[in-house]
Figure 1: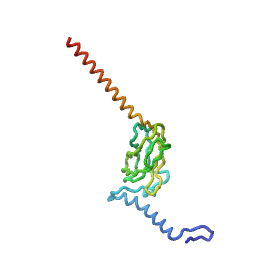
Figure 2: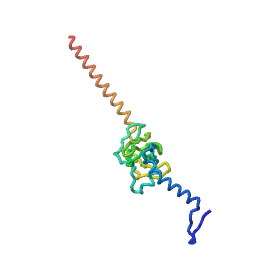
Figure 3: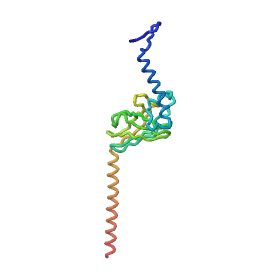
Figure 4: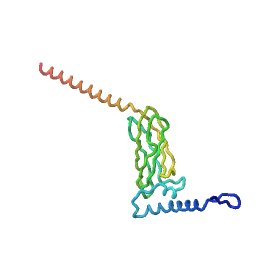
Length: 191
């Protein structure tokens, strides 16, 4: 059932107004309850959303340096700054700009209070090249937190094997040269 005012504009039904009012009360009461002395559970980011304006986020992704991925499988570090006085549970979303890497769309993370912490996202390298990784935070209900960040990643998936092979070749060559030199000294000493 919909209600209209005398001027023809819609007024929300009593049921919708009750749900909206209840949700507003729940969102404004959650930060107060979570910051009390006996609160031990991490605060959901939904409750944080009600206390922050669109430009004043106290939990956000810290822009880091470029990432060099030199393995076929690894974990990408994402720094998250939480300036709230309580732990916050968020979802970290990631979207690569191309198909050179695969990774999960979102992972859950609990950011400790008043710290910058590292979350890691598993990544699988498919091909070599440059990848722009778009990352952002949301609450578990889908509310975006802070601004999205773009991290540049250089993928060189075959270099790990090449480095290992090169290392073994150098060690083998040095061992062979050392053994040959020792054999010459023994031969010269026995004459």
